[in-house]
Image 1 (cartoon, rainbow, N blue to C red):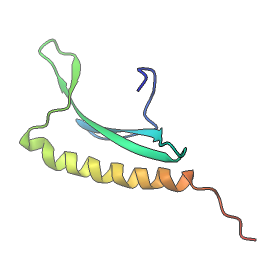
Image 2 (image 1 turned 180 degrees about the horizontal axis):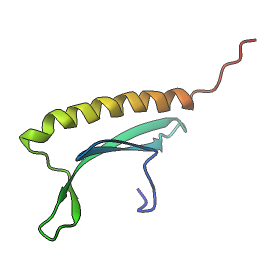
Image 3 (image 1 turned 60 degrees about the horizontal axis):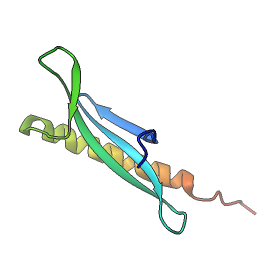
Length: 86
């Protein structure tokens, strides 16, 4: 994956967020992957991120995962060729 590639969508319930990435399989069909991260303020006062979650993050992580799942289904629906009503 190129470092300049950007996610096609993001879902966030601060401090947990999901990035949704679009890729294509060998047949040229879209497939989606998701990465999760948690933001926190470091000792220097600047925001940083981690892919490690503590017990108090888990319910929020589940809710973000549910929203990401819904968003992927929305994205997949837009990938399908539009069918005419003919």
